[in-house]
Amino acid sequence: MNQALAELGRFAEPSLYILASLADGPKHGYAIMTDVEAISGQPLGPGTLYGALARMEKRGLIEALEPVDRRRPYRITGLGATTLRHQLEGLAGFTRLGLDRLRGASR
Amino acid sequence: MSRLIGLYPGPWRARYAAELRDLLAARPPGLAGRLDLVAGALDAWLHPELVAPGAAEPRPSPRVRLAGLAAIAGGALWLAMAVTLVVVASTGRDADFTVAGWVVLLLLTVAALGATPPGRARVVGAGILVAALLFGVGVVLPWEHKPLLVVPLLLVVFGGLLTITTLRTGLSRPVQVAIVGVGFGLPFPAVIAALAGLLPALASAPIVLLPLLAVYGAAWLFVGGLLLLDGGRRRPGTASSTRPTEVAA
Image (tube, rainbow over all chains, first blue to last red):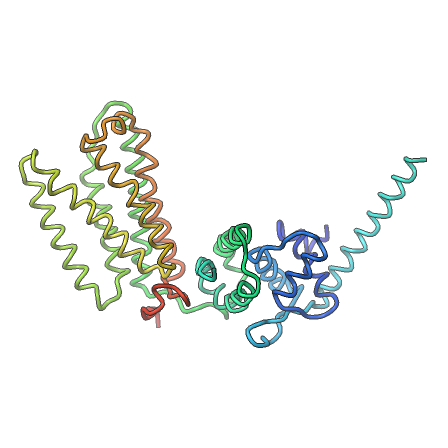
């Protein structure tokens, strides 16, 4: 796990999904929640969502934009994008390694 | 549903409550979502540094903070008394809790008076004075008549003090009722009945008294913590939202 995400403890995994959700543009809380649930296939509680948002905002991984009506969109920052890229590249390498070994074992 | 947002600390609500309320309106949570909100509120209390200082609400007034400190001190001393009482009783010995009991009563009275809005403090103070006088009368009564006056007074005074102070927390009315009910309404009458000999089975097993006594102290610790940290600020949509907010200048 990337250091910036690992520091988030139990919020690390939701935060990774949130960063992935924001990678294609700003979203408000409800849109993030539904998008993360579609990505992960698991429900995201409102307390966990805002616990993760507060931590990510504090660490500069995301930033809040001006509210539209009562909905405040969040945007991924440069640091957040770098963190997400490193994490996904690490996971991709891990995935390739694991699949290669599985293929080797099945021969 | 948005009442659960009232469990979050004031600075956190100032920053996130509007958008979270909007989210909950768009997607009302089930039981798991509600539990997640409660866990989130606990997390927010444990990590106040997550919200930028600029979003913080004004600090509670010294009067309310004093009430919170007195409630915490009274609750902690009550818990210490409860543990000591049960330990001593289980060894078959007697212990005198007169001084500690009066100190607890004094601390809880300070908490209730401090938590009372200034305009109503005189009425509450007069009520406490009347209760103290009646209690004094009860103390000098012959032993066989004591329970008739002293026991109802204990119920009224200890229950009243917790109720008055809890009203100031700014939590929603159902949560306030739950705190007073679980903290006082359920255990206190049972404890007094046991100590008065009306429930000999309970009195013969002192350890059973400990959780009953402990929840009252725990309720004071919770209420005191809220007053100290949050100042009992009004929360939109709660029963206490019509009360003016008292904050430090």
